[in-house]
Image 1 (cartoon, one colour):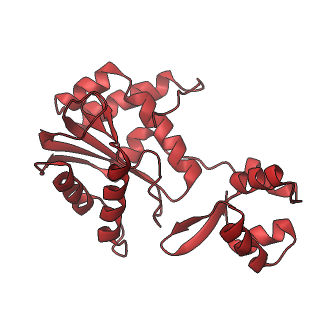
Image 2 (cartoon, helix red, strand yellow):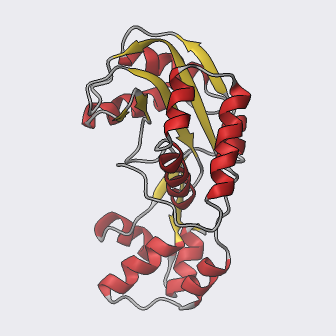
Length: 233
């Protein structure tokens, strides 16, 4: 459940200026998407409880009543697309190609997105091993999109990504969503799927799109109602 500054202020019974002061001076978590500020209800609740600041119980109750749903991983991948023969002789060039191919609204600043991806890689490689990378694992890519997506980029030539196992990367996944909770849930599903040996083999073999989507569908059926493991960070 995402909140505006005004909505957040109403739950605390204070003015919007006070909420902005808490953001600037007291670490109230806030997220910026295309110059718009929003807050996550659960994060706001936890922040208030930790600091002993009175907040309406209805904030937590409302957040629990309106959990954010996500499509299946296969559906997310259908939306984002499976992009083949992605060019790039090194990590930097691959990121340029990825940003150019990513299906995003026209108003999205792709140069800024590229800068964000490059900054994330400078903090530490997002290569998770096994020839796979998931750029921006620790810091979600939040954009003003109608629905979340996962895009898969199969590289024309494997490149060095400074991965944890030192293996060159041949497959790159990128997750785009409009909220932190949705992003984390997608990463959990993706992290689970990428632990499947058959999925990894299909990626390595550059299998047809439908074969990969079918396998993801099978995994989803087998894990319905079961506990998902958390994604690597």
